[in-house]
Length: 74
Image (cartoon, helix red, strand yellow):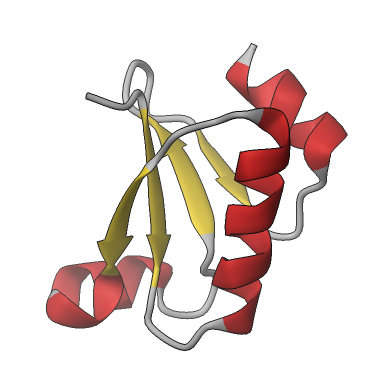
């Protein structure tokens, strides 16, 4: 299981860009589409994509680049 969750939604171009950065850094994340959950829409609807660590629940909001992502996952 991945130690990271990427919150986003279908057809979100920013979410697609975040996924590219994740692949550049070699980070694997479970993708959760917030459109399926009213609570997630309320929490993340205006700030997706958001990467969340499973170990300490820290979140990294978009925009982020490869360097910021590497620091976040270290």
